[in-house]
View 1 (spheres, one colour):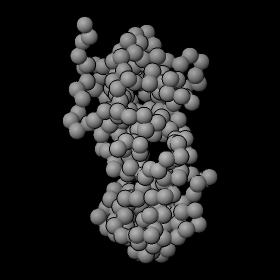
View 2 (cartoon, helix red, strand yellow):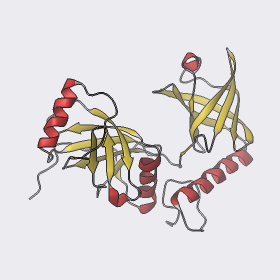
View 3 (tube, one colour):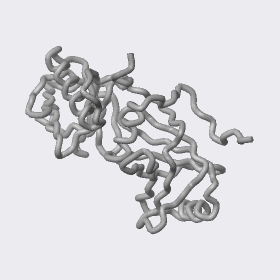
Amino acid sequence: MSTPSEFPIPEGVSEVADEYQLNLCHYELQHLKPKGTILFAKETQEINFCFLAGTTRDEGIFARLDEPMSPRVRRMMDYLEKYPRTECFVSLTLLQFKLIFVANVVNFVKGAQTKTIHFTFPAKLLKTHRRKFIRIPFNEKFPATLSFQSSAGLKICKVKDLSREGMRIQVDPADIGLLDPGGRLRQATLKVLNREMPVGLSIVSHYPGNQVGLKIIAVSEEDRAWIKDCIRILMKQILNLPDTPFGDSLEDPNKK
C-alpha cells in the first residue's frame, strides 16, 4: 500500500491532461532550460536548479545544479547519492504556467560535470498560474523589440516572450527604475519580423534579471490578428502539428 505524499498539493492546481500541453512543457524543458526549485523530504529550504529534457519525453527530466554548492547543499547532495529513495517536491516556472510534481526517487547522472538529477517524466504533472493564450519565446534567431519613450529618452528593449495579452522585456539595470508597476509606457512600438505595431502597455511586474512584465491594453484589431497568426505559425513548427486549423489557445487545438 502506498503512503501519502509528505508534500501537500496547493489549492488552485489542475492536471496537465492532454498531449498538446505536455508537448508544450517538453519543448520548454528541452529548449529554454527553465529555472525551478526542489524541496527534499525533511528539509525546510528549497534548492534552485536549472531544468532540461531529452529529445523525447521518454528520456525524462534533468535538474542541474549550476551554482556553487554551499556546505548545506553539499551535505544534502551527498546524502541523496547514498539514499536515492527520498521524496521531493519539484516546482518549475514555464512560460505557459507553473509546473509541479512529486518524485519518489532521486537519481544522479554519473560522470556529469555538475550535479545533475534525473527524473522519469512524471505520470502526473500539475499546473498553476494558468494562462489563457500561448506565450512564445524570442531569441537571436527569432528577434523582437519594443521601443518606448521615457523620462530618460527613447528606450529600445529586447522582447523575451509574447502572447496576444502581454509580453516580457529585457531592460538595462539603470532603466528598471523607470518602469514602476502600475504605470504605462508612452509611445510604445512593438517590432516583430520587421512589422512595427503601436501598442498601449501597462507595467505589471518586475522579474529577476532586469526583466519587466507588460500587459497589452490597446492594439489595433489588424495587429492583434497578426500577433495571433505569428504565434500560431511558430507553435505549429515547434510542435509539428498537423495541417489543421488552430489558434493560440493553451487548450488542445483539436479539442472540440
